[in-house]
Length: 380
Image (cartoon, rainbow, N blue to C red; front, top):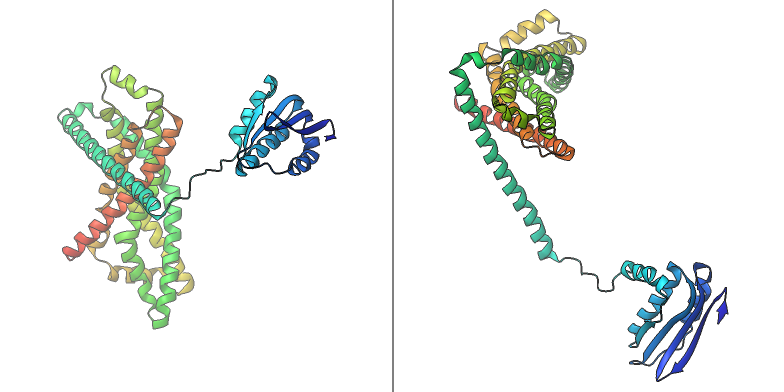
């Protein structure tokens, strides 16, 4: 056969079938070569087949694939093909096509036991990582406590400038976003509460729902979640960048404790700022609820305040705000601990920043649930 410069000859030599190929085995000749190769008479099982490529002038991926496909077809029919006299210039291409050829012995899909084992492995790794992280965080809390006690014995070492700067960064700059979100939450709660209570003619009790829900739970919890996503992530990113730039190692070299210089100002700055932010969030949420109540229920501001005064007592606001320092300490410790764990790579900064936010919010919600159980036990 001779077509488009490529040819194939079939002969019998020395007890073996010889397929002699020559010319230009290129993609332009692939269709004709394919027809010719498929028309090759069947070879008896056990026969030796020699594919002679000594006369091949040019070869591309399509031509090499046709040769390999022919070998596979012959093997499936019980023959023993060999490729001979392959020009040296074409050997790398031929090996590349051979390696990229799909394997006929691909591993079988994993069974149920293997998939279950894989799932258990993932769960086990996550559990071990969670336990290791919890142990490291507990050790970090002990280190911070030790440093704090040492600093309290020497009040002159307290860095008030850094403390005020952290309060400004975590507190003052957070007022717009916390105020806006709290206001909108108050609007939503008032609207939804009024919509449900209207069925019973008890719209006025939407004020009770709003006041107790905001002051005891939602105000401080919403504030803590916003601060965790905003300031907690900032703590991790800042300390992580310092770790990448070896600034923390430089502090240790000159004899300064990174916990004392970097962690304590952030910890106390957030502990002082978060209760104030929570109180501000309570006020903005009640303001939003009052405006919505006035708009949809006709409850005037004086009536709203009178009903709110009857719904809450002196402990309602305090029971919410007392959680704020604990939430703040959790967020600051988790954020700083994650920042100090950063490896010297940008990917580590991003991964641990995300991890610190998720872990902070998780722990804040756990703490809030613990406070709820405690209040129920104490009948508060």
